Image (cartoon, rainbow, N blue to C red; front, side, top):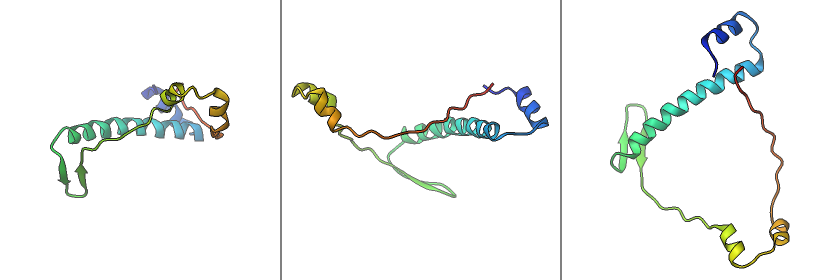
Length: 100
């Protein structure tokens, strides 16, 4: 967690790209918490259209079917080499940012 004094110290010096990114991510996290609370309140209300002054929304209830591929592989004794042969691998680059 970034403290107020550490932010003040940074503001007195040069803000690096990683500092700026960290500050933005902290703001986004706070905004996501607030957005989630509002979404939950709206979802727990009645279904239907919601009209605001600037935006409109719609709450709908639906069902999603998900196939449990691991269970199917186990049920039909699919060998690991067959699963590996048909598995896509994608390179992913990640950047983790944490406060000091």
